[in-house]
Amino acid sequence: MSNQDHNLSTVVNTSMGSYPVIVGRGVIDNLGIELHKTGQRGRAFLIADEVMFPNPVRRAHEALERGGFKTDVLALELGEFNKNLDTVNTVYKWLAELHAERNDIVLAMGGGVTGDLVGYAAATWLRGVAVVHVPTSLAAMVDSSIGGKTGVNMPNGKNLLGAFHQPKLIVQDIEHLKTLPAREMSAGWAEAIKHGLILDSNLLDKFESMAQQMKTLDGDEPIKAIRRSVAIKGQIVSSDEFETGDQRVLLNYGHTVGHAIETVTGYETFLHGEAVAIGMMAAAGIAQRIGLINSELVDRQKSILESYNLPTTATNLNADAIISATKSDKKSRGGTIRWVLLEGPGKATTRKDIPDDVVLDSVQSILS
Ligand SMILES: NC(=O)c1ccc[n+]([C@@H]2O[C@H](COP(=O)([O-])OP(=O)(O)OC[C@H]3O[C@@H](n4cnc5c(N)ncnc54)[C@H](O)[C@@H]3O)[C@@H](O)[C@H]2O)c1
Ligand SMILES: [Zn+2]
Image 1 (cartoon, helix red, strand yellow):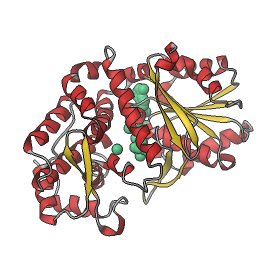
Image 2: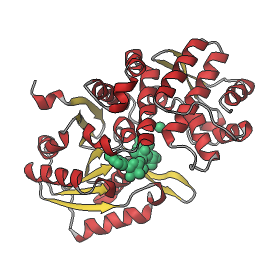
Image 3: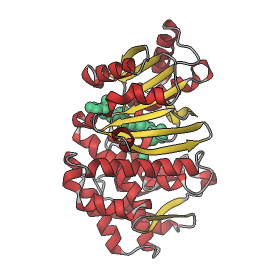
C-alpha cells in the first residue's frame, strides 16, 4: 500500500457512482493527483470560503495545477446568513463569465455551508457538473461532505431548496482544522461521537479514553477516529442513499430534539452540534425511561460529551415549545415521530410509539 492509499478512509457507493474519501495530514497537496485518478479531465473551478485565504486556497490551487487542471478561484464570504439563492447566483455568474462547461469540475472548499451551497450550484449548473468537496470544518468532514445532500435556505426555512448530487471525490486535510474555532471543533466532535454511539462501540471507547489527544489533534488517534467516523457515514450512505431504508435515519440520533432546540432559540444560541449534543441527552432519557438502556449509559454519554466541551442541558427554554417544534420537524412523516434511540453503546434502533409523558419528562430533564 502506498502512502497515499493509506489515507483512503472509505469509498462511498451510490447510484451516481463511487467516490473515495481521502483523510490525512497535508493531503491537500494531492488534490490534483487524486482528482486526475477519478478520470475527471475538465477545468477546475475552486470556490472557497474566504476564511481559507490565502494559504490553504493557494496550496489547493497549486495542487490542482500540478494534477494538470487549469484552475480558477472564487472566494466568497460564506455563512448561514447568505446560504441562499443570491449567493448561488453569484456562483452561476462567475461560472458563466468563465464559460464553465459540462465536463468541468467545481470544487467546494470550506465548511458545511460552502459544501451545501457550492454543491447545489454544481448540481444545477448545466443540469449538473462534477463536484469535489474539500471540507475544512470538522462537522463538514465527518458529516455534511459525505452523502450528496446539497442545498440552500429560504426566508421560510432552512435547506428548503436542494438536490442530491454526489461528489466525485472528497479530500479532507486535518491540517485545515488548526484554524477552526474551538467551539466549531466541539460541534463537529458531537457528530463524530454520535457515529460511535449509534454504530461503533470501539469508536465510542476511543472518544472516551482519548478526549485530550482528540482535542489537540496530536498523534494518530484523532485521524483514525475521523477516518472511522467518515467510514461510518460513508457506509450508511452506501446502503441507504435516499433515506428510504432503515439505516440513514439512524444519523438523526439527537436531531429531533436538537432541531427543535435550534428552532425555538432562532438558531442563535447553539451551534448545530451543540444542539444535537443536548438532543442526544433527551433521546438517552427516553431510551432509559422505556427500559432500552440503563442510567450508566446515559451518564457515560453525558460525560463523554462534556469532555468535548459540549453542552448537555439548556437553560431558559420551555419544554412544551420544544415538543411542539419536534412535531413540525420535516423528518416526522405524517405527524408521528420516528425516534432514534440507543439500545446499547454503539447500537441504535428506532421507535414510533413513545408516550407523550415520556417525551415531556425526558425533555424536562435536559432543561436546567
Ligand atoms: N449536506 C448535508 O448532509 C448536511 C449535513 C449537516 C449539516 N449540513 C449543513 O452544514 C452547515 C453547517 O456546516 P458547518 O458547521 O461546517 O458550518 P460553516 O460552513 O458555517 O462553518 C463554520 C464556521 O467555521 C468557519 N470555518 C470553516 N472551516 C474553517 C477553518 N478550517 N478554519 C477557520 N474557520 C473555518 C466558517 O467560515 C464558519 O464561520 C449548515 O448549513 C447545515 O445545514 C449539511
Ligand atoms: Zn447534524
